Each structure stands twice: as C-alpha cells, then as structure tokens.
Length: 215
Image 1: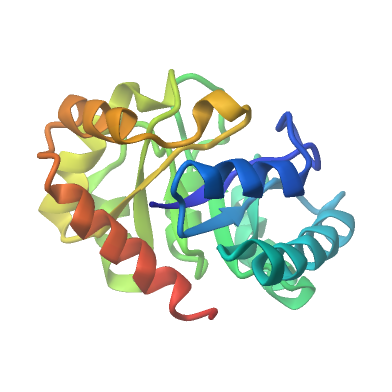
Image 2: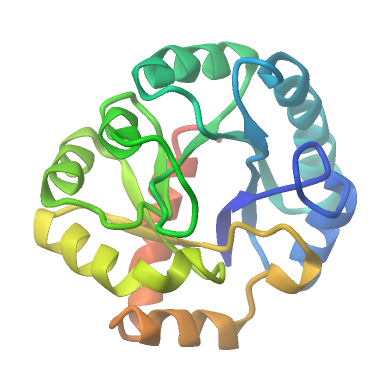
C-alpha cells in the first residue's frame, strides 16, 4: 500500500514520525509521505525536521518514507512561490489542501494549485473540468480520500478527473492511527467513489509515478 498524504504532530496529527511510520509498515505499507500542514510561517522549521526523520526511518524500517508538505490555506496567488520554497527546503511530495466542501478554503485554490507544479491536489471538493484538465496537462494527480467529510465528493471528483484524463490516487489524510489504510477501507472508499476494487492497482501505479521521481 502507498499513502502520500499523512500528518504527524508537526502539524495536527497525533503521532511522532517514528510511530506513524512503524504503524504504517506494520499495516503493510510499502511507501508513504509525511505531509504536514505548512505555509510561509512554518515551512522552514517543519520540512527539514521531516526530511531528517524520513531518511532515518527509510534506512531503519524498510519502508520508503518521503518528506512532503501540505500547503494549507496559502493565498492562491502565492502557491507557486510556496511550492518553490518547499522544494528548496527538501520537500519531495507536495500536496495542496484543495477546496473541500467541509472547510472554507480560499476560492481558486484548486486552479492555482494545479498550475503550480505540485504533485497532488487533495480533497478538491467540487472539482471543475477545467481544473482537472489543467491537472492532466501538468501531471498533477487528483486525490480520492478516505477521510470522513472530505470524502463526500469522492464520486464527483473521480468522474470529473477521469473524464478530463487526470490520474487519481488514493490517500488517507491520516491524523490518527485509526486512519491508516486497510484492505477493507480501500474497498469501501472505492465502492463509494463508483470505482471497482481492481482500480486500486491503477491508483498505486499513479502513486508510484510520483515517488519514482524522488527515489
């Protein structure tokens, strides 16, 4: 299993990186990204800490751990600048907190995100065909999420993304141990999104496309 959207106590997650990684390995993960919430105020602190942890844990726990970041509530016109700064600081997997229907995310976050060279647009809410088309053109993956609330638009997101030719990935947006993937959770989430259980292989392939750039 691969999960490229997970949080630790460096933002609002409940676990330190070592425990999160080991719990994921125990559940059968082969690769994961730690993508704590960041903006311009904390990226210079969080990303180097996660990068150090990712290196140590990859070497010692036999699971590929990638340092990442979830740009969250960054003013849309500054997302491209924020992405560049994150890359300089060592972030490999860059996720943007999309326009989920359960939070008041700044309008136009989705479109500025898919134009900015990110890896994954997370829980994009009412994804538009234009946004999905730009994502497809720029190689940005669209997230189908297991997370309660954000997942309410999964079926809509999957339909629009696939229609536009954008590739989709499955992530958890993990904050607590209970959020970590299981086969049962994968099957349930795909079913509710109108996707077959077999489609998970395609989603893993799409995730591998992302991490292959950074291994």
